[in-house]
Image (cartoon, rainbow, N blue to C red; front, side):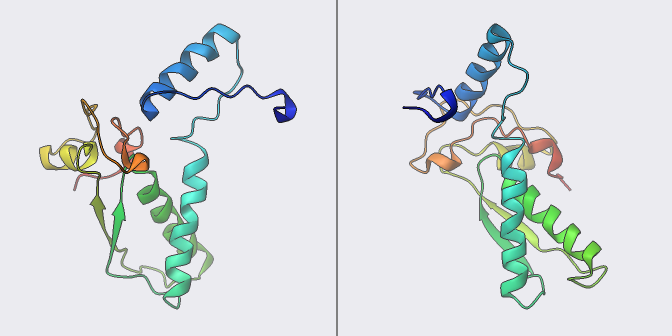
Length: 149
């Protein structure tokens, strides 16, 4: 029995298919708010990784972080954590930020493709395939926040 009357739908598709279905249902059912998993929850939870890295390195930041990337929110979350730690005085002001190295799934790499093309926004990756389901994000919705310089 679903808690609080929740209705759960298993989507046979990609995260972009889920986003499309949510948008359609939101309009049809007059939903006030959806919990867009690509733009809300992960940014806050992904910040935890940045705090963990800094704490485990004695409040020093590494030169680089190699990160498996789907939609890019992990990169954004860690970067936000580094900013917050500097504001809190947990890391020294002006601390050099790590070079963020993106490692996508082999058959779905919209962020590296945009980077290589010098674009600030990625284009949807057609026929996205990879065994790493968390990296199978054909349209990186957080791409515009990630700098191409």
